Amino acid sequence: MSILIVPVGTIEGEIVKAITEALAVFGKKVKVGHGLPEPEYAYDQQRKQFAAYPIIDQMQHHKEYHFHERVLGVVDGDLFVSGLNFVFGMASRRVAVVSLTRLRQEYYDLPPDPASLSLRVKTEAVHEMGHTYGLGHCINPRCVMFLSNTLADTDAKSAVFCAACQAYLNRHRRTSH
Image (cartoon, rainbow, N blue to C red; front, side, top):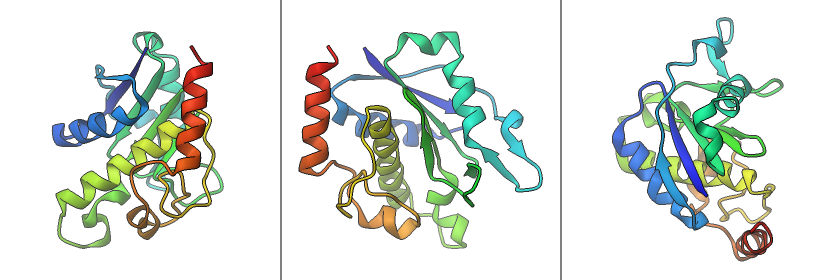
């Protein structure tokens, strides 16, 4: 089984490549699927943001994506869920989505920094996929599964699992076959 990356709207090839490399940590084949158009159906005009769950729902019901163990959507739009101002990403049982918007330096009126963006995207992609494999938030601030409420949280943690989260994943891998 494989993990499928789905560009939602226009996503730079370097970003997709970085995510593909990062998701190798799960020991699954990583593929890039046919993208989806800009998620206008999920746009909230008042908030000027995209609702995360309708995007996840769209991917869950897309027939082409059913042949993959997990699906990760990548969108270059600001995401939110009810009750939160924004999210870097969101996950359901087998489908997740990550947003590039607040991971970009430009969002904070700073000059572009492709290296930082790449590392942040890798970190958030692994984090959201970790949720689809049953991992919750970790208390270790260096673990990729630590909750990111701010960009500083994302920058402070690594793009890899701590020993406890890795052990959980290893057990899950053995029992899910």
